[in-house]
Structure formats: structure tokens, C-alpha cells
Length: 402
Image (cartoon, rainbow, N blue to C red; front, side, top):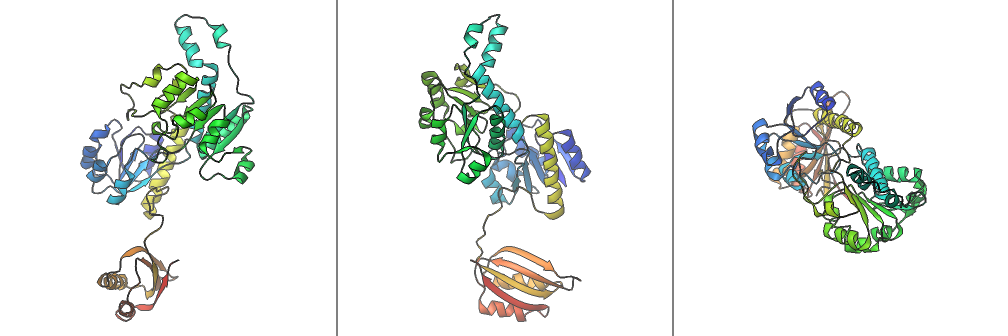
């Protein structure tokens, strides 16, 4: 199985893929706009990327491409809709970088409170400003709000609690009971988090629903001088609104992600936020620790191994959650060539679309049971033809789905 690795990837991951018997083609420096041509040239079965953008043209360029693995959690850099149209699985590696991102969030939080970047900059200029930088608020007893209490959010909560901070949170699936179990306060809306918190960490996926979740209203709800930390996706924050809030209300921000940030490892990049006092930034490196990348590499190996053995892709994000099937057709049959071909021929002639198929063999491999999820009930004539048109069919039943 040929695997194209189109981003930087840990050596342990490359070696692990080779140990599985994969032919690994390394093109870590290929630009996003060159990816389609590279896929056309290599024609891989699997594609592994980290931050590289994979558009529809790239996905369509390789006739053999069956699976794209995002060596990380977020999938907004991959055109998942196009992959689904083309029959390409997309998998990610959720949770493997949670600790790394949480560590950066705490680092940004401390930097905001103690203004560490500014102190370093002044020292490098030869300026001693102890009187100014002695005005830190301190974190103990303060409240941190977490918007999005997934694996990263929970790691942030644990670390903030060890600092003696109170934690409140909102998440789509968070309940009062779960919040009590975690020892945190439950908020009904993101705006409630903003109102209650001295610092807010944004940990949601970058989707159409979360675009500009942090907008003018959210920032106006925050306390004057409060801290905002975003390590999720740049699209989640309205950057113009954040700049106004920083200048007019003293909101401080620690950002690891930005709108329209470069996709590669090095490039020229300018953002007006970098010129605003009290806004500190890193270079989208939240997941970029050795520990996280090794863990992700091992997860990629596990996904590839499962795909090679079973054809199923763990953590697949574009598998249909619920098919259009209305009935299950159960056909017990002798395990002989031609039985399933007969079954599918009859369904085709009856204009019944097959949604899912499972064929389970009995002990001894003499008989099997086919379970076929279909989009409509086969006609009585078709059922009779399935039952009587092949001597190896034992029984035929059809059951409506709820």
C-alpha cells in the first residue's frame, strides 16, 4: 500500500508505516498548490498531512486515493465534503495533542498576567521597568472560563484548578451533573462564560457554526481587562472586534491561531493584532511538542494498520451516521458462488438501492447470512425471485427499520 506523507512527520511514524509493509513516499515540503500534481504523480492509496490544505482538486487527482489522515485533531484544512463525494475516507487523531495544547494555554495565561513577552522585549532593549511590571493581578482565586469542554478543555481545567483557579465552562454536551463531577461551574451559554470569567480559553472546532463565536457581543460581555486565549482556529474570533476591545476596554489576548494564517512552516505573515499592546501571539504551535507528535505518529500507524486489515478507518469523520435504508433484507444461504450476485441482480431489476451490506458466515463455512439494508421494500415478486431463483437460498425475510 503506497502512502504519501505530504507534511513533516515523525521518524517513528515513517518507520512504523514501513514495518506494516507500506511503501512510504515522503514529500514534506510540497506546497498546498502543488499537492494535486504530487498526488497525480505518486497515486497513493493513503495521504497523511498535518497542516497542509487538501482541496477538492488534490482529492480528485489520485484515482487510487482511499483515505486521508489528518495527523492532528482539526479537519478544517481538508475539503471533507469533496472527499465524501469522491468516496475518500477522512480520519483524524483526536485527543493525542490535548496535553500539549493545554500546556501552551497555561503558558499564554501566565504571559498575559505577568506580561512576560513585554518584559523580555524591554530587557533586550536595555530597559529596566520593575515598577511597571510589578503590577500583576495573580491567578490564584481567579475564574477561568472554558468555551468547549472537550479533551483539551478538560486538560486546561485540571491545570487551572492546580493553580487554585475557579473553573466555569460551556460546551454543547455539558450537563449540570457532569460539571459537578468535574468540580466546575456550569454555564448555559458562551456569553455567560464571558460575563463570569477573569480569563476565557476558547477550545472549539473551527466550523461554520463557530465562526466569529467571539464577536463584539462576546467581548463586550467580558470584564474590562480580562484575558482571552484562543488556540482553536482563527475563524472563531472576529479579529477586528478583538482589536477594538483590546484598545478600548483593555482586553488582553493570547493567540496561537489567526485568520488567513499561512499553511506552511515558514512564510511572511502580518496581522494588525501583532501591533496591539496586550495581545501576545505564538505561531500555531499548540500541538507541536515532541510528545504530542510521537503520540500522533503512533495513532496514524494504528489507523493505517486497521485500514489495511479490515478496510475500516478508525476516527473516520465522513462516514454516514445514518443511511437512507428503510428495510433490512435477511437472506440465509448456502455459502456458494453466485448467491449474492443473484440477490443483487434481482434488487437492481426491482430498482431497489442497496445502502449497506453484511455477510456473516456460520461455523464450518457451509452457510452464511446476508443482511442487506435497502432504501425501499422489495416487491413481493422480487422477494419470490430471490427465494426461488437460486437453489442455494435457504430463506428470505424483510424487516422495516424504525
